[in-house]
Each structure stands twice: as structure tokens, then as C-alpha cells.
Length: 81
Image (cartoon, rainbow, N blue to C red; front, side, top):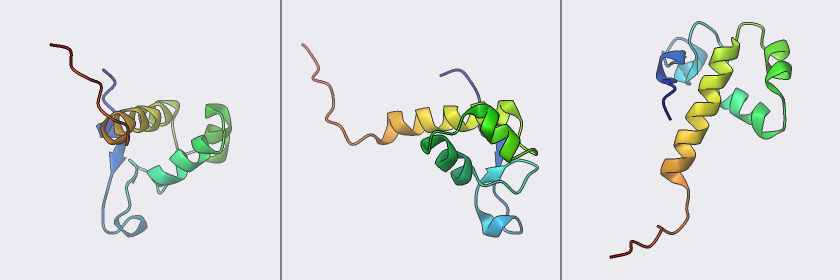
């Protein structure tokens, strides 16, 4: 995945208790992930969280995709010799 999502997130002790948030907002990353998991569209998320940009939602989706690649509890594919 070529989209660099890391610049969209920040974590500071004084913002939301140190939880990872969308940079420049108080919207936690996990809140947007939960909204997506519940079936919210990007448009619904943008309406619900006006301080979040479309690009930030794209960053959340990219983060989820990369995390899934690294953490899926599935057996490794066999390597053919």
C-alpha cells in the first residue's frame, strides 16, 4: 500500500488521555474504525465528525488494511520449493 497514513494520526498525553487521534482533532482513531465496522459510509463519518477530512478517513482505512495484513490470525501460505 503506497498511501502514507501515519501523518494523519497523533498521540499526546493531554489529548484524549494519550489515545491515538486524528491529527488536529479530538476524534480517536478507534472511534472512526468502529464507525466503519458498523457500516458507516465515508459521507456519514464526515457528517458526524466535521473536523475530520476525507483524506483522514482514507488514512484510517489504510491503517486498518495494513494492520489486518500484519495481524490476521491465519496460517501462512505454503512456500513451494
